[in-house]
Image 1 (spheres, rainbow, N blue to C red):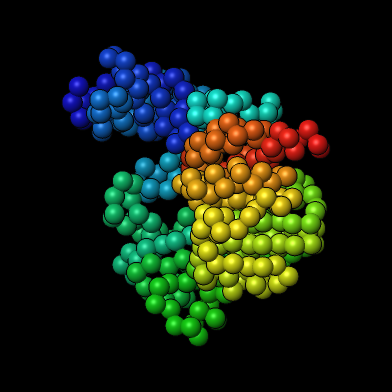
Image 2 (tube, rainbow, N blue to C red):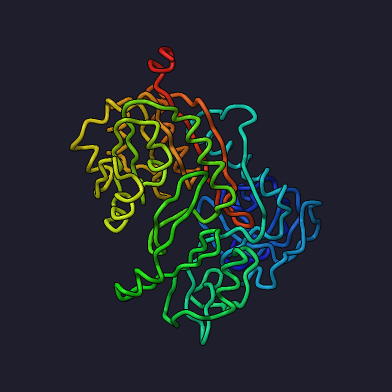
Length: 387
């Protein structure tokens, strides 16, 4: 079967990336963008590999009751919101079933029954955005392309960011990062910014519960401030209190700043040197280190930690870091993941090394997209017996 061939397929279920799954006549799996489970669709194949194929739904012949009309006129063109054709209730169920399937397949593990998914508003939620120059304004990249789609208003951006875009009172540069702190202040950053401009326009603070956190628009920070307190509460409840906390991939010291009153000794480790300035401000009593987490673990003994937090990028834990954590066997391991697939992969190693899931929760930080975050509280079985 050739690329660009058209086939009629019945969708079976949803994959973690937001595509529907079907099978071709020859038995190969086919991932279909723009379709929902149960639908019958006319599919144009875009990739035709030996073991699988990919395509997009050119026409829906039998639609799901969960199909809705996309709210954004740029749906299908902009590369951002690929799930706007699905009801939000369907999206939440898709997250659940896809994550459970990942853990069954990659980790040979069932997640705790009834694990909770936290969610907020499906639109107007995003407090952080990176935009690219488009003529006299800004826009987002087109789906599967480097072309730029100009925008004047985005339905998933917070009202403050949309007002900021409409006002246009900021420099016209090739790429700009915006951040709305949820309290009326929008900051921005672009490469080549002078230090005086950086101090004036990029700096910001975010208040979570009763903690004020220093950050800037060049740093990574969670994009959904409405749901973020739910993750904070889960981490605080699981962490409890103790003598020694290690926070790896710590960014600006976010979790350590929330937990600093609960632990006598804290170490934060973050690769990005610029984040260290904020970590020293946010967690002044901690030992804040600028280093790749895997390198720090190779040179330091983490076995005395009461709680070890990891919040790695989408690639998950580097193998050497994972091995070091397994050997250290902290009393509690709290894993925050922005990619359930790499989380399931990493958990298999933890499971084989005697760790069990004590708590699992999901966070729909990015409605209308397939991106989903997970929180796991893990404990070595020997520690679990003591508890």
